[in-house]
Image: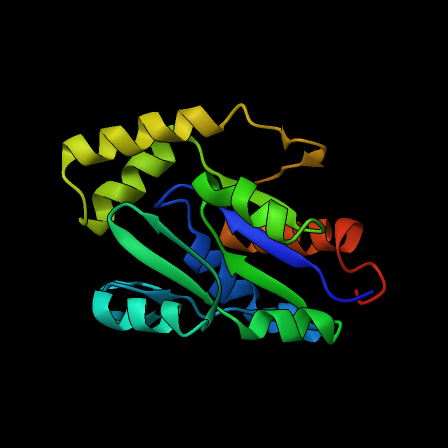
Length: 190
């Protein structure tokens, strides 16, 4: 039957990278690969286990067919390596740090996709964005407004978007992610 693609989405500052890093070992024990994205941003400024490349290198890789998925968001290009298709074919599950704005496109390509939206309360999100210091106050407010647009989404077509709150303790979010996978994606592996 193959593996299941788990598409983790959430606003910048919601803690996706922290959640992925904290869940990495238990996910591997569940036969779930965590993808390293290719991003047109320097590796030092990413805050995640990603591969930073120039725009030219990204375009070269894209033209060579190195990506199963790619998109542009917030002025950056993101690529998901083609090897995920082999992992899925081999029966391994794959967790991708994805983009809410490109969910429909990804769902067309991977209809068995499990979309997971990481949510966080506005006051927590604002504090996290201020603390990391990457965005101006205007950019932070724009991100908060954009976050509100996605909070009402419960499905896309017939596919339910599963919500996972990360406003509190990271360990709780990790446990809830593993429970979500137990119920929806990898019941025979947990």
